[in-house]
Image 1 (tube, rainbow, N blue to C red):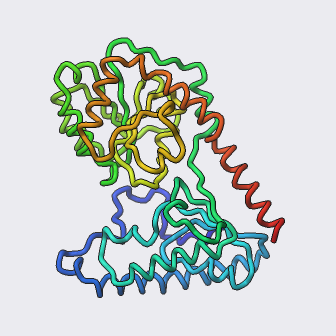
Image 2 (spheres, helix red, strand yellow):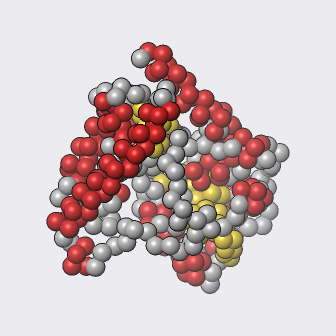
Length: 343
């Protein structure tokens, strides 16, 4: 069940529409009182929206409600009071998400409310490994990963990676600060010219112009822009290596499953979430926020790519076994059914 869309929301809305959470002018940005007011305003709006949605839920007489976690969302509390089972999918730290836009005196309160929201739910599915961050004493939670479509995975079943000529490295991203583009740039510039001549970097997504402009003079760079799923599948058949330069330590990365489905060797920082789900026989780790470590890994791969090829095959097999959307949804459905049966 979704709230009815406002008519002013157009499906062909401008891609450059500004977020309502734009950074504030410097003197206001530092105002904790102003940030606290913004939190209170957001909470007030959330209450109004939750009450409207609650009316729809009660009208339909639902068996349970599945909620995507949001900042200061009171709907799970209303459902708890009314004894309507509530399941929450949580991706990220909601209380932390706004701190890059403004400071607030209410951050500790926001964090406490978020923890309480999870503890009263019937069950919480933490995407990635955010459950390991919260460690709820209520034990009503599990970590779950993202996945990949079965058809997308099957399109690579006959794909074999052959290293002839250059090693093709892909970066898929809608570029944000946590992707650490400068780390990638620095690591490439750290390579000697001979190693760079063995590589071709493929940029797939949006906002990657900075990387392209910084590196195209010293190595082969192809900027593909945004690709739909069919175009991405065709492109990844020619790619040997999938790269994730940076990521928050508990966050899932959907691009890892696209790389793995395509049997790419995947280079990732050694952070909690990747270590939680995968091992060194499936992916290649480098030290987080360390350009020299990534540079050494790329050098080893460029000089002896055949040594790494089995990791791509093993990751493909692991994703087929555990991380298709069909299997992920089936696992969630089983937990929901068990919770409802025990209620």
